[in-house]
Length: 272
DNA sequence: AAAACTGCCAACCGCCCTTGG
DNA sequence: ACCAAGGGCGGTTGGCAGTTT
Image (tube, rainbow, N blue to C red; front, side):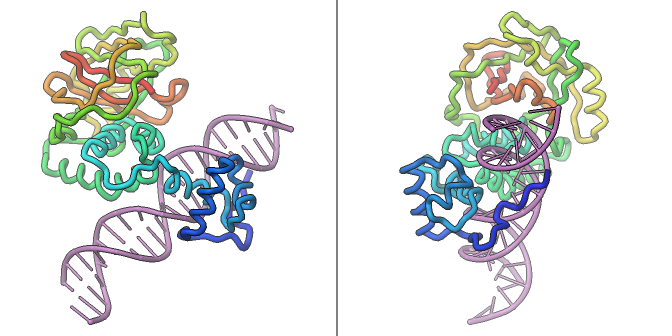
């Protein structure tokens, strides 16, 4: 099916929004809600396509939009989440209240990416994957392993930062220890939701020149009542952390890696 | 002072996914 | 099961503002 371009209809305005248009859109949505975006501009009396209205509302007019520069904590969260999620801007935005995917994407491309590149160049020995990957093996494997030294990237982070805003109430947590190569499954509702990575992954990952190999395998347990903590203070001291993933990883679980947390001697990964 | 360059960001585009008939 | 419509997402771009030459 080939969809006609959204603004194909003649007479629809494009480009920057005027103040009056903003006012019309805002007051209409406040009164009636957005309902059907395609129908909205007509009902509101705007010469815009619904898609444009939706974007304008979501990225700019929404009352809960946070204005102003990103804080250090927000930037660190973006960097960390991007390392885990890749270019899933909406998923990253979901963890930063008041920030939009578009804004985060812009900040990444114009600021954070360069910063990371700089930081990497200053560490000639560090090799970082250009695109984070997570691979899941066949469902029979029970070993979950982690590699890729995230600490390489966060060595310079301010580890005194306070907690992030993310609510942990509906997360389940994954604890990553570092010894026995066993999954404790008693707390896992369904093992089908667990990402499982087998040994072959590491050899595959090693094919990618830029993907560091694994130095140790990890014990992963899951529980539902662990607190979400942030940031990830000094965890590189004890744990060679990695996460390589690809889009297939989302299947059936929509991603359980959220934020890494260090608690005493373990690392937690939290689901969202 | 002005032209050239660079960076930033709002907005657009096109594809994919979901939903409902 | 199929199709169409709507919504959502990520990539890209155009234009403006700031900086450099």
